[in-house]
Amino acid sequence: MTLTAERTAGSTAERTAERTGERTAERGTGRVPERPTGRRDTDGMAVASFVCGLLGLLVLNVFLGPVAIVLAGLALWRGTARRGRALLGLGLGVADLVVLGVLVSLDNTVSWGLAG
Image (spheres, rainbow, N blue to C red):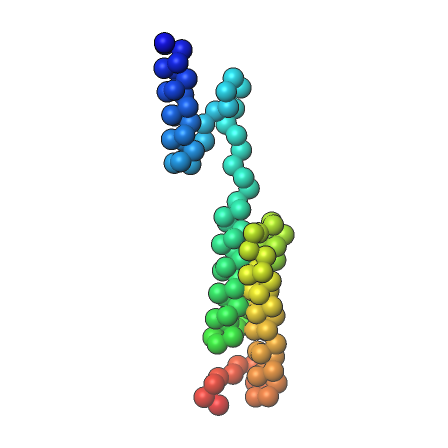
């Protein structure tokens, strides 16, 4: 009876740890398993690159374009689950720099504005 109670307590503790995200030691080894290398972080980078690229088409494209390109590259390199979003961020970051180049060449200045 005591052995069954210990097994039940152990499995309950494991389920609670899995649900709350706590890392527990593996049975018998005393080692804590490694956390998966930032899948959620890379998904966040993919979304951030998309948002920066989209906003960069309107404002601060000289800054937000390269940021979108770097974030998308890092997300793709680390293997994000949101590959399409990262590729869109990469494309929008490049488009930011293209829009900046076109508007600067039409205005013949280093800065540009929508007001003319």
